[in-house]
Length: 200
Ligand code: GLN
Image (cartoon, rainbow, N blue to C red; front, top):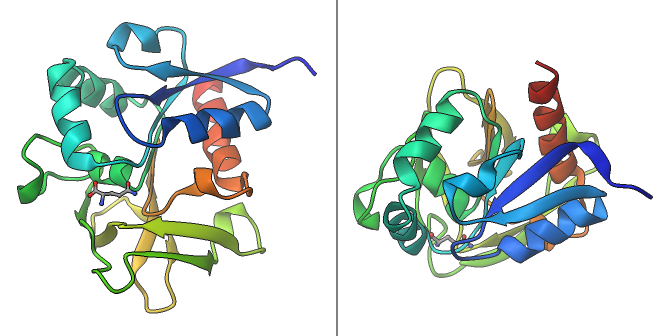
């Protein structure tokens, strides 16, 4: 089957779980490529910021000269999905990561918010925007969302009410790792955001 020729996705590949995202888009028959420099975003329609270590990623983004130009691009409406550390990178700056986040989404996150006892877990999560069937969400030393600004929609909460997925216009932020489960509905949801932005 030929690839979907309408959209091409970039995956920020400075550090972390970027290969798994590329593989998801491949399975969805959508072209995707690694991005380390701003020029590599030319001709692409959306960006994934993967999980990894937000401290390292924020420093590498600064060193590669990506922080300010990416912030500007995303603020202009370019679709982006941040997963786990990627969600931290999209959020308001937090004190303990040493370099600036992109600070584009009006959320504050709590890094490593689940503590030592349950630092990794998997849970079936209800995410109404992708359908009725619960999503197998893998949390690895995950952040959670502790403040949600105006215009930010919470897409999923744990059973105790903790917000773990949100969207603000062209930006999608997930506490967990959708690329580590076989369920591709969140990648597909992001692709729809991208397709709609291309149409406009
Ligand atoms: N704990 C990591 C951080 O703070 C995030 C972990 C992950 O992306 N799996 O950056």
